[in-house]
Length: 247
Image (cartoon, rainbow, N blue to C red):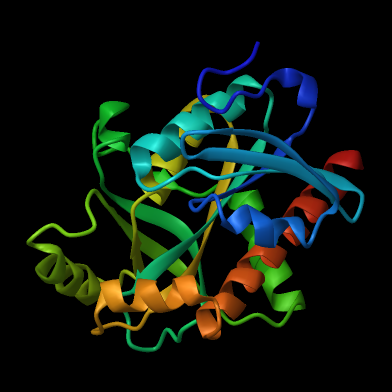
């Protein structure tokens, strides 16, 4: 059945989905796919499919925030997707994380609203162990710099306590901040779907987030390199997962 928001149905027969936030990022993803094909575009949900090393992959944008990412996760599950990898941007919460470095998120602080609508906060938001392991393996093989650890998924970009919250979670060893990972991990775990999140650092810790995001949109610095890194890491992880499933 065609889903209400992503406008896709199970006839696609695709098990793996890569999930950026920005619809424009699909243009960059398409360059790595064989025979990319546009599928649908409704609201923030733009989708296309293609193959990478012989494995069919769906790419779909989710917009900003856990609510829209959660809609995408639910509807992808409904059409038979078995594994999802978010590729997004984040602001670093540690000084040793360079621009363009990846954060492979093993777990997320559930400081969002979407995940709390599903289950109490005591329920953890964690990556699928197998899929995260394959992401780490892929990043190492590709010689991509990455950091593994926890992300802080918050609810709003400009809220007044953002700086204070960032300082607090930095002191607790949290690596970066985004707005979607906690919702994805919570929903995926409840629905029995494998999920991982790969974040590209676009903001050095202690610098202005809005200015850094503006630079990232220009696409001509280290953060654009990081975007390519997260795309390749995710796609190679899917190839490895498919190879395991075929054995």
